[in-house]
Amino acid sequence: MDYFHIMEYIHIFGIYTMGMNFERIKQKLTILADAAKYDVSCASSGSKRTNDQKGLGDSSGMGICHSYTEDGRCVSLLKILLTNHCIYDCAYCVTRRSNDVQRAAFKIQEVVDLTIHFYRRNYIEGLFLSSGIFKSPDHTMERLVAVAKKLRLEERFNGYIHLKSIPGCSDELMYEAGLYADRLSVNIEIPTVSGLKLLAPEKNHADFTKPMRKVQQEIQKYRNEHKIIRSTPKYAPAGQSTQMIIGATGETDKDIMYSAAHYYTQYQMKRVYYSGYVPISEDARLPSLGSQVPMLRENRLYQTDWLLRFYGFSVQEIVSEEHPNLDMDVDPNLSWALRNLHHFPVDVNTAEKQLLVRVPGLGLKSVHKILHARRFRNLDWDHLKKIGVALSRAKYFLVCASRHHDHKDRQASQIKALILQNSSGKFRSTYSDQLSLFQ
Ligand code: SF4
Figure 1 (cartoon, rainbow, N blue to C red):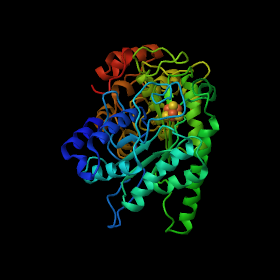
Figure 2: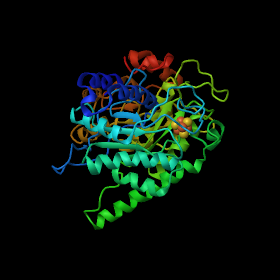
Figure 3: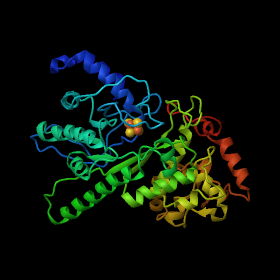
Figure 4: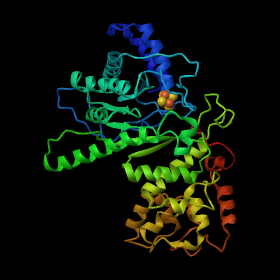
C-alpha cells in the first residue's frame, strides 16, 4: 500500500474514531511515512507465523506482495519512522540533524493503534518500523522494541514486523527485538569503512557490526535449541538484512560486491539491499549527480546478487582489478559470457546444470525444464522456444539438435552488438537510458 492510500484510508474511516487526534496523526504520517521512503530493505519473505485462533492475523512464508512508489521505493507495509529527530548528522540522510525539515515523533501507542486498525481493515500486512536516533541509540531502540512487544503481547498481533536496529544499541535490546520482530536489519549504509568515515564520521563501523553479530548468534542459538526442544519460541524467523547506499561515495562495484559477500558469509544476511543514492542533502562531501538517481547501477547490482546467490557465480568471476565496474549496457551474466567465450557454445543436450545456468537467456526455471525434457528427447530450437528460453540471447551460446544453429566464430563485440540490436525495446533501453520501472 502506498503512502497516498494510507492518507486516503485515514480520511475515509476517520482515525478520530480510534480516539486519536485526526489532524495530528495525519500530520505525523505525512512527515514520517515520507521520511521512511528511502529505506528499500523491506521485502518480507521468509517468515511464517500462524494464528492460534486467539490472536490477530498471521504472516505467510510466501512473503508479502509489495507496491512501489513512482521513484521505485517499496512501500507495501505500513512503513514509517518512529521519529525523524536525530542526534547524528550523516551527510547522505534527509533526517540528519542539520537539515531544515519538519520533525515529528509518534508515541508508542499511536504506532500500535495505526498498525492494528490498518491491519484489521486489510490495508496492510505488517509493519516496517525504523527511526532517527533521538537521545541515544538505546533510548530509541527501547521504543522500537516497545512497539513490537505491545503488538505481540497485548494485541496478539501475528502479522509481519520488520524492525530497524539502531546502530550502537545494547546487546540486551537487540536480543529482545528478535523475540517480537520477524526481521531485523541494521543498515550499513556506506559499503566501505573509509566511505563511512567520510560521510558519517560520528559513527563507528563496529556500531553496525556488533548488533548484526548479536542477531546472528541468537538466531543460530535458537535454531539449535529448536532441534532439541520443538517448543522453543521463534527468534527473528525472517533473519536479518542490511542496506547499502550506492553512488554516495567513490566505491567501485567490485568494492560493493566484496562488501556484500562479506555480510552474506560473515553475518548470514538474508538479503543485502542496494539503494541508489538520492541527492536530497546539500553537502560538499557528496557527489553531484543533478537529479539523477543511479537506479540502473542499483539494478545491475541486484542482478549480480542473484548470480551469486542462485547461479553459482563468485565475485571474482564478475568483477576484477581489470573490470572493477559492472557493464551498464548489458546484464552481468551476458557480460561474463562475452568475456569468457571459451566456455561456449555448450550443448544443451549434454551440458552440466552448473554450466547451463550460466548461459545468458537461460533462467533457473528453463534449466530445470531442459534437464527434465532432455531425458526423453534431444532438444532443438523449437523445443527450447516452447520451454521459454530467451533465444535472442541464448542462441549465441548454445548448440542443440537442430542442424542450423546460430553460433559462428563471432567476436564478443559482434555478439553484443547483435544482441542489443535484436533485443526488445525494454532490454535495448538499458543501453542508452535509465531502466524504467514503469514501462
Ligand atoms: S543516524 Fe540514521 S537517521 Fe540519523 S542522520 Fe544518520 S542515517 Fe540519518
